[in-house]
Amino acid sequence: MPSESFQSQPEPQSNPTSKEFAFRVQDLHRTYFLKGETVHALRGVTFDVLAGEYIAIMGPSGSGKSTLLNVLGCLDRPTSGSYLLAGDDVAQINDFQLSRIRGRRIGFVFQSYNLLQQLNVLENIKVPLQYQGLIGKDAIAKCSDLAKQVGLGDRLYHRPTELSGGQQQRVAIARSLANDPYFILADEATGNLDSKTTHEVLDLFQALNDDGKTIVMITHEDEVAERAKRVIRLRDGLIESDEVNQK
Image 1 (cartoon, rainbow, N blue to C red):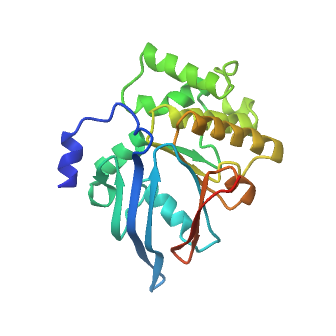
Image 2 (cartoon, rainbow, N blue to C red):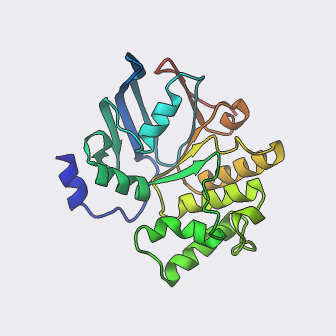
């Protein structure tokens, strides 16, 4: 059973290497009921993402984009189909295992940053490690290095209210890297930023991808999608197109 395999296998010590799959989605369906009606949010979505890819997922309201985001982020399960991440079918595992995968294999970056206001930069970055009981000097050193990587080495002890929107998003990106995730899932990550700061944050995502990080960017902005190497467009719960970006 998939649940047994997850419990018996040790946590991966490294990310997948190039030419391996970060994850695979096969014939994904998500159906739910709303006000007495059946809504088919996903109608058979299939695609693979290789380790080291940088993809953008786009689609208008009602396309299934948000539903797919929730499934990829292990915040929801598909009604049918499979979602393979690190050898486990996410559709088949229990809530506890789903939570572990969410915390250890996926790095989240949200439009609203989702920082803890009472914590400083270093402490916010460290939150994912604390959930695993990692609170020693090594964890502090790692989070300090991540802050420097995103250009906030001189802001370690500042709280979110003392940072600009772009700086707060950099903290969120550093936090998403703390657990060495299989991929970064960014949901409208530049939606609250001005044009200049948007370019700076996208440059940071590009640098992370150049270093081998797998990035999945959910966006409705063409300017953001143009930075990705591949663009998947959804419409009515189906993949309308899946194309390599011509740069």
